[in-house]
Length: 229
Ligand code: NAD
Image 1 (cartoon, rainbow, N blue to C red):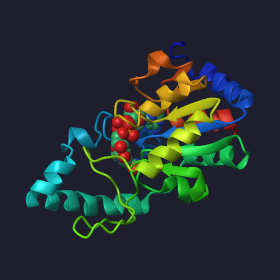
Image 2: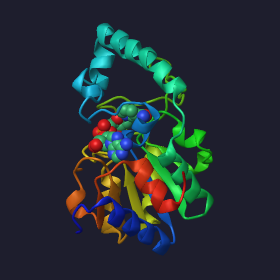
Image 3: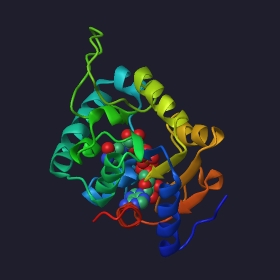
C-alpha cells in the first residue's frame, strides 16, 4: 500500500504504471464529470447535501416519490444536455485509442465517455444512462438508469467482471468507492493480481488496498500523466 502523495510525484507514478501496463481498465464515478459541470453526490456541496436519494422500493410504492424522481430527472436535463467531455474524459479516450485501455467501466449516466469518442462497445455502464426509460408494467426491456436499491443489470455486471479479470492495471477515477456492488470491481482486480491506482480528491473506501492513491483533480492529474490537454 502506498499513501497519498504530492501532485508531481503522483503524475509521474501514474504515468509509470500506465507505461508498464499491457491491458488496463478505467473505472469512473461521478467525480470525473464534475469538471464538466455535473455535480457528484458525495462531495461537499454535492447532490446529497441538498436532497436525499430515492430508493427503488419507494419509487414503486409511492406516486409522490415517482413524481419527485421525474421532477429531478427533468431538472437535471439542462445540466446534462450542456455538459461536454473534459480533460479527464479526453485522457481516458486517448488511452483507449492507444490500445492501453481495453474497457471503461462507469457508474455515470451522463454519456460523456461516448461523447469523448470512445466506442460504445468499450464502455460498460453499470447504472445505465439517461437516454431511455423502461416500462415497469409490460416488462419490455428498454435501456434505462437504475435506482438506489434496484438490482444491477446482469449483462453489464458480467461484462464488467470479464474486463476486470483481464486487467493488469485498474485505474479508479472519481468514485468514493462506498457503493456496492460497483466498488467490488477494484477489489476483484486487486485480488486477481492487478495493480490498483486511485485518483480521487477525497479519501475513498479502498485507499488502503491501492498501490497508488492520488488525492487530486482528475483532469490535471490524468491529463498530465497521459500527455493530453
Ligand atoms: P460519489 O459522489 O460517491 O463520489 C464522487 C467522488 O469523486 C468523491 O469522492 C469526490 O471527492 C470525487 N471527485 C469529485 N470531483 C473530482 C475531481 N474533479 N477530481 C477528482 N476527484 C473528484 O460518486 P460515485 O462513487 O460515482 O457514486 C454515486 C452514484 O452517483 C453513481 O452510482 C452514479 O450513477 C451517480 N451519479 C452520476 C452522475 C453522472 O452521471 N455524472 C452524477 C452524480 C451521481
